[in-house]
Length: 239
Image (tube, rainbow, N blue to C red; front, top):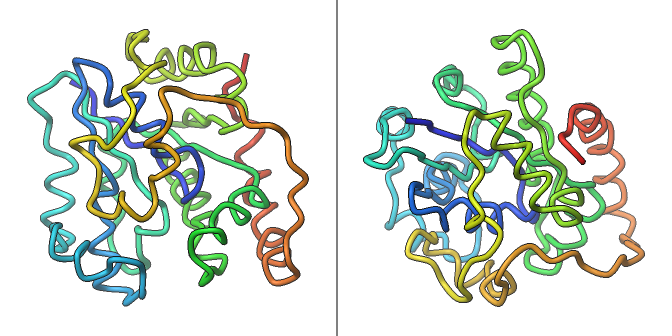
């Protein structure tokens, strides 16, 4: 039995990745289990804040227990937002999991995020925490854990997902390449606000290249995040 934790920030094909794994018959998928906890303890004013908190476990110890308990299925896929791992809480449970990291160019992350929610800073997009968790896992393993870049996945889903599965000692499944349109039973309650585009998808689709022109305040955040992105990028799996 494998518990695979995928660590990313928001607006990073993370939901499509969850749909990919969730379409496997042998997989149970979890959507951002620490989201409600983060809203309670950080006090963020996110869309649907009260509904999210009411729908979820919000106690750290119970969440850790849930995330480290095997599923009834052979594979448990956990979609994690790195910025939900708040400072002051013991992250060592992560070392009990099989961990992988999903990265994306910060300018593209910010351009997508700002369309949905204007209140954004460096901490909101998770690059700092992603680098911290990567370092912790790499130190434990003695080598870099698997890293995939969103653009590589979109360019060659079969190739990159095949390499990811091999790196995580999971058999690749063709079901990961296509999924039905619409909401999924494992979506978080926030899906109605954030997932409208991915609900229209049936698989990974490379988007036309767009020039990402950010306003000055977002450009400054992208500049701060860029070294953190570049830290993980050399370790990415690609074909």
